[in-house]
Picture 1 (cartoon, rainbow, N blue to C red):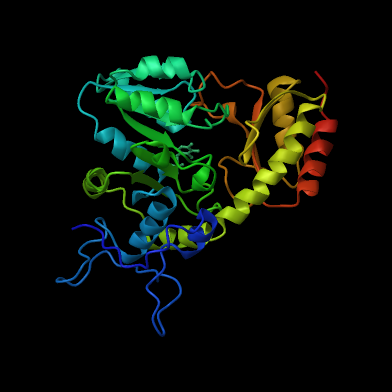
Picture 2: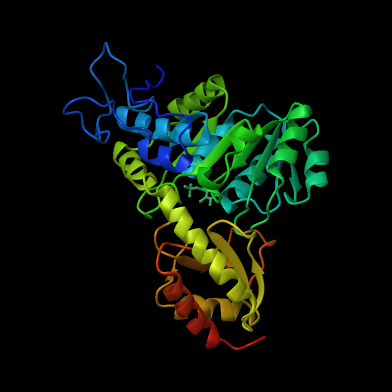
Length: 365
Ligand SMILES: *Cc1c(COP(=O)(O)O)cnc(C)c1O
């Protein structure tokens, strides 16, 4: 059974900011609820649109409607971003040639390497900000897996150019759009076939759920992806989908505020003596800094901040920071002294005051 779209169609001429508020609502009618209810059912009485919750359910479908609307495709929601990523990998034929970023999200990079090691796929690694290298590698590949900006090095791909040349050679293109969010970039409108999201991050925005999604431009491809969810079993819970939808209503506001803080604070970081390098593409809600005092200084910074929260993940209302190499699986292309900053929605002044106080106390390089 396919998921039924029971919700109001929002107007496609409306801006993304507006559609983040209007998408995925129940049809307007007297006494109809404003929000899609949480439907905590694994099974449904036969004879209607719903059968079994692994295939879909009303709350899950409402989130899928909203995500599909924002990314302009057909969305399938999974129990985590990694579950969504694995569903795409599972579609690859044996021996498929996959081109992937040198510093993709850790879980994705490790999983692709595992698949290459057992001979399931052939893997070519590229720097996504080297457009010619991406174009050369993607010629004749089965799948070009892009992430932009990358986590945590914040390399930016020329998405339009990479997507166009990959498709001219018949390669499928996936873009992990977790960092940019659909507010800042919509890869399907640039011709990508698939968009991946860790909905856990900015889309949900409150650090209280794990969810993922794949959005496909072609509804038939979305159906193949949905079948992976049905058969592999990584179905999301109705409660989590409800929380994600609730969070998504404020996505545009949260991204605007976080991006503002990043824009103000990144240049101040660049001129601080304790910081040897700032990686910040000039937009978006994340930045990474390298500490002149090496990994020990990076650890001290994470310990000494008071407002910034020392924790992994990103895209929440609270500003988070961490030294990425504290994770054993993180790529060694990520410097030991790199601290990733995820800007939240607190006051820009308070965020800078907290960071700069902690940085001032660090030994200079
Ligand atoms: C977090 C993240 C993922 C994985 O998502 P989970 O929801 O943690 O499984 C994938 N890609 C990027 C860019 C991420 O930041």
